[in-house]
Structure formats: structure tokens, C-alpha cells
Image (cartoon, rainbow, N blue to C red; front, side, top):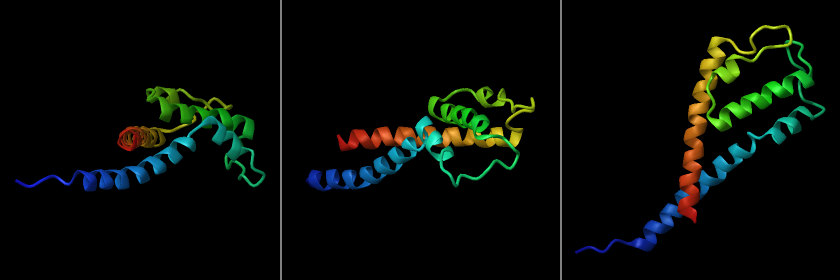
Length: 119
């Protein structure tokens, strides 16, 4: 009967889990409200091509972050309006954000699994 090399398996589990945890933890850090404010506060942050001010852009960005992080319904973004009353996102953009939310959810679950493996 062959013995299972537990120390080697545990070593490989840690080798695989650590990069996943570090990468996804960085993604989570970059999807916080503080990061939105930090980015928009940079002097060299590009102006909006549609003419929105930073004060108008920040709440939109924060809502996008909330949508990703909370698993909210796409209507959260679909109901957003620009100051002129137009929808903030078209259907193509909403489909894209839905896909991003799905991938983000998988990443967060992978981070949890990696954290448990490292514990």
C-alpha cells in the first residue's frame, strides 16, 4: 500500500493558495470606496469625455463598486441617471457589468477558499 505524501500535498496547497489569496485580496482592496476617492483625487486623473465633474463621477463609481461587492441586482446600475436625466449605462454596458460581477463573485469565493487553505 502506498502512503500519501501529506507534507508534500500540504506544501503544494500552500504554494497554490498564497498567490490566489494575494492577487484577489488586492482586487478587493481596489474595489473599495476609498480607492475611488483616491483615484479621482489624483491631479493627473483624466477629465470625463462626456463633461461630468468629479463630484458627479464619484457617486457613479461608488455605486458600481457597491454593485460588484454586494451581489446586488443589475437594476442598481440600470436605474442610475446622469445629471441630464439620461441613463448612466446602456444595455451593452449593463451586460458587461453583470459579467464583471459574476467573475468578481468567483474571485471572492476563490479568495475565501485560499484563505481557508492558508489557515
